[in-house]
Image (cartoon, rainbow, N blue to C red):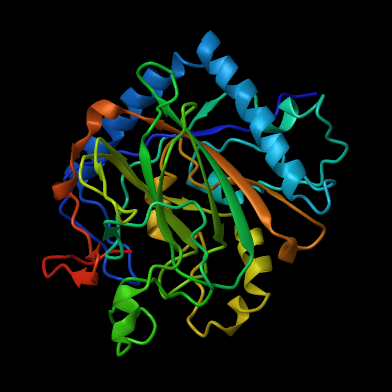
Length: 358
């Protein structure tokens, strides 16, 4: 049996591009920026490649398989539907790869076939942090609040590509729109009701959480909806050495990487057919049409997450996982990342210098 590749290693590059896409669009990357990203990605591919056969890396994969299997067993309604993870080497194959199969019969003795394998170093460059990044997020793993939608459990392993070791106590921001395409914390045209000033203080589907001693962080969210010009996606951003405040928020430190994660088009179609996603009147942009996904899937990159269904129907929920390779040497001060707003003890405060983005 061919070895199943079930670890997706992503290196998220941060550079001072100075370009953001307006909501609903995705601006092309200029030639100089593209060349810089390509150089970074080639070097990172080589840098992470040496980890594949190291004892630390193999041990990490083993622990990840056990953790993800136990999580799946705890969450599953029907354990007979499993992911056959695959690697993709360009935009076309990334878009055409189906990350879900009907593999069955998985037991604790065979879990390594699903949840480990030779690590695939798939690099994702910085695409856009979006206008919807909020500084000072609540530290929490369950970001759902009262939002309805398909439950999405996510297991994220963070690894230093220089040492091949997990990175403990790295804070990871997670945010995305709700089932009908609205982000919390932002009042803007194209983001739901632009006259609803209360959304500035909303915090649904946003959170930040630290990795544990094994470099692992988990979130419980809902599957993201869509808005005009963008396929469903999740934003992630990593921090080190920031400050945890008494009110349960995090701010400051160095930002290493920012990027976006995507989902199979077939999975998106199935989710979009369910309620409340099917009440969204905005046109659906497919993965093929999303040029930001194209940036992330350029070259040897696959930003589409691995996942398994937790039951026989999509409404039973999903478990997704990803391993993120981080180059901690590529960090920059958090003040170089321009948020749309900052969450304070008195609510959200708009950043007048925020740009556009998706």
